[in-house]
Length: 255
Ligand code: FES
Image (cartoon, rainbow, N blue to C red; front, side):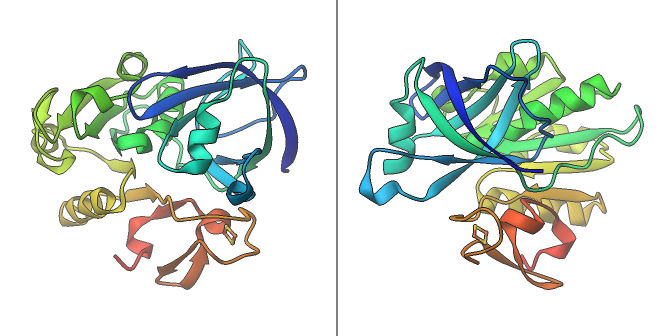
């Protein structure tokens, strides 16, 4: 079931040069939302931003009845979102899309690989894995140390490995160069981030015969399978990322 809700901004905080963390709440308990799902938010106030923006669910804090959205300020719509203040309202359609595959047994070793703002849904997924008795390993990549987001929060749910392209934090290079990949072994990988990164992660997983799922960030408009602007070529033909995804087994993708 999908809901259209006017949620109230309980806080909006710039957490680094690229990202704003928006926390939303409601008088009523928020609907159930699962890791991997996303929200379509309406960006008011600008003629060219009438379309909704898909934003992945970063975290759901049940104690505080809060939904967290981590927003990278990349365009006009997201810059408008970044100007929200405490007390503002944000119209949201939620929850949308499918979910990451939950932990199947406590000994399952899951590697979560995120790049840029793509780390966002992995925080909520990591919490779910930890609460189910698992021990996720996070591998987070950024261009530079200042672009890293929420690292202390990730550390609450698992081991955190970092790569930066300039070497200013963690190991220098791309996520697929990190030494944790040679120590493994992992039973499964879930990834979210820039497409070239996810493709490299999927290649690594296939070489090692490790199941891999990726959360795609294709351009979206309607969010409900009506406009076809989010299609991805798959082994089963063109599929709408908003409806059939955003999470796909990478073996189904024609990468
Ligand atoms: Fe319209 Fe997916 S965003 S079909």
